[in-house]
Amino acid sequence: MTHSALQIPFQVTDWNIHSSEEHPGETGTSWWKTVQYPGLRIRQVIYSKNYKADHWCRKGHLVFCIAGAFTSEMEDGTEVILREGMSYHVSDELSSHRSHTTEGATLLIIDGDFLKS
Image 1 (cartoon, rainbow, N blue to C red):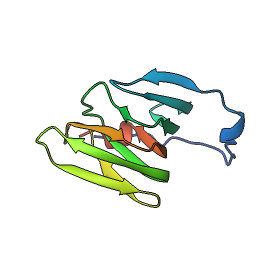
Image 2 (cartoon, rainbow, N blue to C red):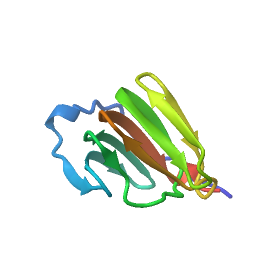
Image 3 (cartoon, one colour):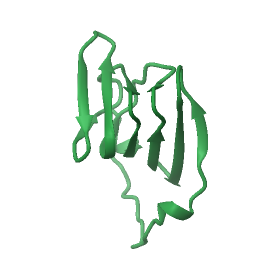
Image 4 (cartoon, one colour):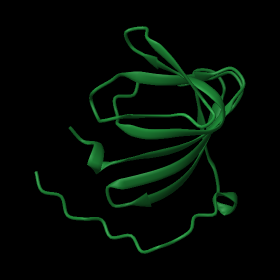
């Protein structure tokens, strides 16, 4: 498979001035601030206290926990706790996962075409 290189000139993202998009979970809420390019999405995501995703996700991500902590739950019941300074990465279609948190968390999430199987 051949991919053409995405050309992004040097730029700074000030997440403080981006507007948030609200996404209710099964419990709690997440707020997304998104920078979108063709085939690439970069988000700052904030989970409220007691947030639990309302779906199982099979999309690939690079996820870095900026603050707080959250649990990434796999459909087979395996759980991994990620705390501030930790990250995970997975390609599309290689896991069914969802997040939940008790105290809330702030994440940087990057996904896109480069994670397709």
